[in-house]
Length: 173
Image (cartoon, rainbow, N blue to C red; front, top):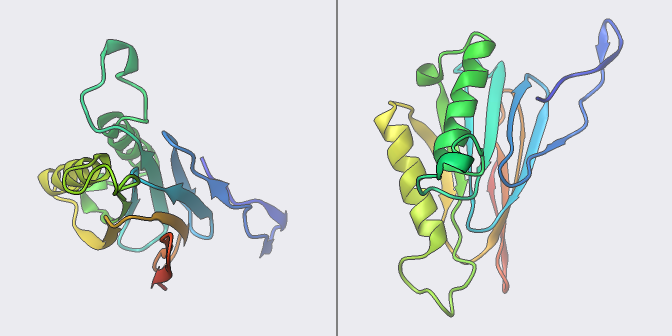
């Protein structure tokens, strides 16, 4: 869980960025920075409408986990459950949140031209959010590149840098 440390009671020091690794889920408060690097994986950011709390996950798999992995947050269903639980624990109803969704790239476009792991991950996440009534405010999905996602919990949009083998592009504010 991301936290904000203070040196002096009246002067907050920006928290060190929390690096979200594959399978991680983090909950942050206003001012906390959450970051991740994505390929075919998908990251979901959920935030309350006032932007006081945010959650980020890094989903690797979207299939149904076996019994040994049912709590493994590398799986979408476990990651989303963990995010919803964490948000409820700090008094936020996840169904009142708004989402940002990033990732789902095709890391092997020379092998898979149509249906690939990234596309399956995207389809699952968007369906999950729709089924649970969570609106997606913005997304940057698909393509053949990596994405660096960074968000400081608050009113600004997440910043997404998409890195393709032959070009770079920026998305977000």
